[in-house]
Image 1 (cartoon, rainbow, N blue to C red):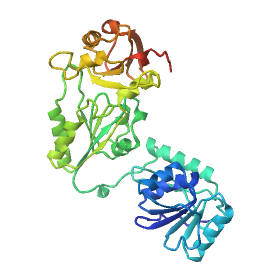
Image 2: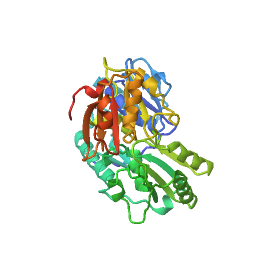
Image 3: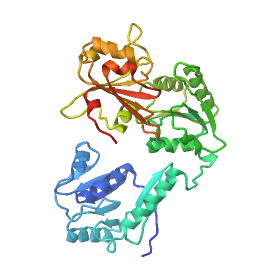
Image 4: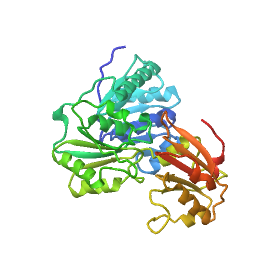
Length: 399
């Protein structure tokens, strides 16, 4: 069947959706994302649709469809489980010269919903002569190729907005595949990348030769680029009109000084976007089969930095953590782990409390070591490691 592919710009326009089942539940979020004013007509609706109605994101007429419901609609989706109703909705739309998708019968529909994906500003929509499974398979293959950089989709310089900007991107806990799609999209646009040593270095290999890579590696307790220097590089390049990505491991707002970098951009008047990353404080334990909370075991967890040892310089209330029974997740604590263990035991934590040390989490070099709290100081550990203290660390799962 021949079709003429076209993209509908529905922002501010009314779209009628008849039926509140799973098909409508899948289609409505895309319509809302396109800016449409969605009017739902259905006696019942899925939880997702009813929640959208309750929050005011769509209007729900909680009743059966009536002739005339589509009088003000620019586009109609007939998605009930009754073919006769869908046929009537489509017939009325046809009479009013309104495009209508029949979810139950592609052959009888005067419009199709294509299998669509978008990445890095490129939208791809696929149809396969009414075979939705085949269309979805092709869409997924194209989407994967775009994300992997196997399909060239270069941006022209004229497409870049005037002036520079900065994106603060969290790259995740170590495995390059764990960066978010938004983070990967912005990284592919970058003209300058300011990267930490804990950011997955494989991500840098996909960048073009014309991309400036600034190594802002900070080695624990050794020589490192100061935060002020990092801030200055980001701002200077952005003020030169370039798009800068600050790439760092984990999430930049979890002991990553992301707030300082955000403030530097805002104070300089540089547009900035924050892209959260998957924090190693949660992903590291998960990669070792350790949940930071578990029903019936523990209902709270605390993430603390061990960069500063217990004492007057530390802002962590180690005594309170020792007195509690929640999970404790330590980042940057390898050097001070013995002092931290002693402080927790002094605060009341059982010396036999299980501990797991997850080193190089999510990478091919991931190593997991087990001990009890009293032995933490003498148990082997290397940077970068996430240390998990509490009952969940002793659950014995292995992945």
